[in-house]
Length: 578
Image (cartoon, rainbow, N blue to C red; front, side):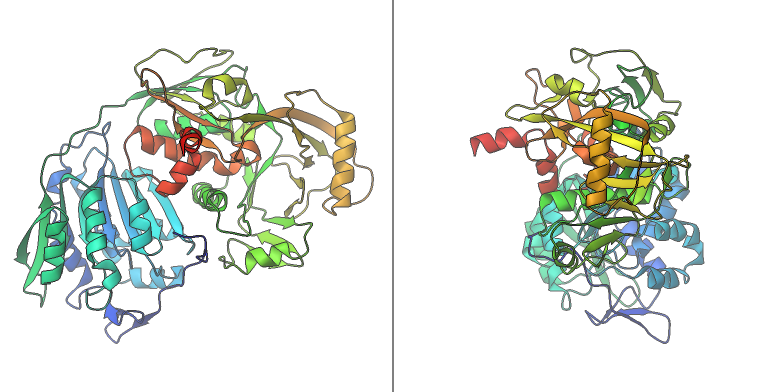
């Protein structure tokens, strides 16, 4: 992907014919067979990849079964596979990864799904999490069914090379090769071959000679089978070898019970791991995560930078995972102002979904922005039978264990979690509660004014004091914050005495990106880190946890490879030698 791309994808242009068959106007081709889409999926893709037989005997503590697809379309292949997965009742986890250049509008998708009532329960869950048409990777989890869906929005030539995964079975289902050469070419076949696990398979409805030859050149042994409907033949293939199972991971130790550690603990616990959390304080969120309230929001910039892309993905992932109303968060929406009178308009004109952001009067509005109470959120996350928390347990050295250790503390763990060649910065911040009635939408501009979930007071802050680990309370700092917010027209004029103060220290990296992934260690011990989230930890915590889980359990990554590199602990050493 390149920075010149607009973040927003065009929706699919679909016409429905007299028989209810959706026809793509971009490719002048139907989305599925006129002889029956569901039966076609079952014959070509599920049976063509010898499913569900290959699902039997999956180990829930090993890496999942991964299906890759070219062209998500209506989601029919995914929904039919979901149904087959549920009916076969395997013990493992299914990851379904699919590319899409022209996503379908939710309203039209819902209408199209109505023609398959037998898939209605799955379709409804997909519709609830249907992503905005923003370029990038979108991870959707369905834990009750032990299924994850990762939608790669953008041109497959850009997105598939950015996928970090080992695919067990491919559904090659783009529009007809003569109409959609972007999904049927030698470069893409080579990418598919590289992403395929040893012993992995593919199936496709087409038996075109150039397709079969291209896939054979990519490492598959290709053969024909009886086609579906009016098609005489279809193609299947298998890559040589046998997949090697990854080591069993059933336990992990997490250092830190703030928002970074709590989200990782919950994410891994829901996958069946036994989790021990070591927390130096007497309760969850004893350090920087103990603020009264904070914001979950996107952080758009003037260019499509890795930082913008990462936090956009993080915000959208958090939004999907915070759909059910809880007392510790509110979807109030957020308004952000800028010093530069043109900045909001210049950001918005790059092209974003209006559901993500809108510009008006040098302000950006984030309709889906959330206000959260982090301490209550951490407490809720840690309430799981697979999680055991040891409070008042300070960690001075990395615990010696053959199970993974994840360092998810803040500035007090900097000496343990700091990668080689990285400079970490301590940043003091103080928030205050005030008796002023909260704004209908949270406001931010060099600070913020927001509601305090579960309280009648509102919250203002935060101060920003670089190179300081002082967490003492300061009335003078509160007064300065009030003046700053009033000067920036965030907070109304008048007296706003503090009803409570909270100060702590944030940790940031020298490139202002979080540090997430496996640390280099002399004995190659399994030590991971999620730290340096700065002031954006509430937005990024859930995605960071998903990244740690994917690396730990050898699952498809939820973000692009170049974004994994942008948050990797190894990036600092890589830059020092380049």
